[in-house]
Length: 495
Image 1 (cartoon, rainbow, N blue to C red):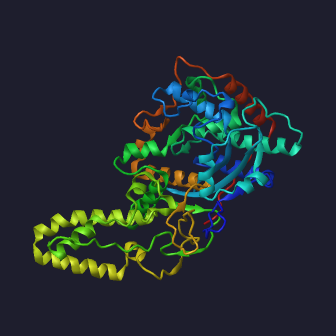
Image 2: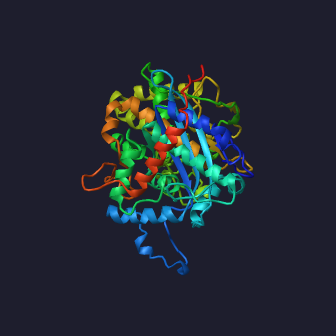
Image 3: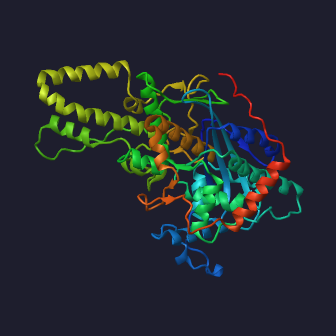
């Protein structure tokens, strides 16, 4: 994503627009066919209906996407997906390149639905604040018609028909490939994907679930639900899990254990500040109005003060946004949490060892920090250095950083669909290495907002059947595959 007036680090993905989708379609299809699994993410114009004009005549009581009953929730979610629109779709294909190694191809499809649709102001503000280029979407977005079945509505523009058919065939390629699909909190992603490119959403959630089992027979994995089950007690929002997974794999690699190796097809060298989004915070010393021991008071304040936003660390958002005085940088937060955990575990041992050992331990920690300054110390540095952060031989983050004119903003944009898809796939691959077959027991369980312990089960019921949409569209997919040549899988590029 691009943000006018902000300094951004380039992200590694291919932008797919109306101008190049014809040229890129065969490449996208090829990478889908070669992938071990495919991670997806999407951006859309609404998650719910709120404050709708009375002129529409909507019964907003029926639009509760956090309803306890799954049938009520699906009815609300379906209504939102049918009346709003996808604006971008991120695909991240993980092509195997040896044991625990992948070539990763990231595609960011910029979309423009041609049906008249609703736009939630909060959703558009969120996208704009995170660098989504609404002007580019209007001028270069791939034009498509949502929902009509089995083929898109006719349009006066032949170009629109071609664009819409090609973007629809991207989903068809995913269905034909029969590869695992990976999402993060992906219930709405699946609903929008179905409504936009497969056909009208079914009336019942039982048919919706039945259809998904046929569309994606290798299963759908939701990394948010998986993380909450396998690593309970930790934050489960996307950016946190991604950076935590990066660290976990780095530790495994350093220890000589099996670790994930990811190679992006287009790696860019770029410079960014070593403290990039971190505030240059200086703890404010509280005035001691009592006659307590000054040394003790300083130690207590040091323990209580946290230079990062605890609410953002736990939930991935903060009501103060850019105005928050504490850091929202995930890597900085993880640095702080690791140091807190280390100091917490070290204190009981030091007390048992006696005062001499405590003093020696303090000297050792000071020596280590002088030799290898931690990011916590760097965050307080006034003159950060510029260092290269991605090289062809190293795993590369797709992070897009936004800084204000003074280089002080502590917010990082994590909402490019391609970037979110890549982070989702990276988390999944990391969890696969660490937990192995345990992931398969959590397949086809999709996280439900507000009902984390009660996921949507993608499981064909004996009392349900496939929808009319499913029968029509799957027949169309078969016809297309029979009349078009199969794209041969080629060898991935050499390292």
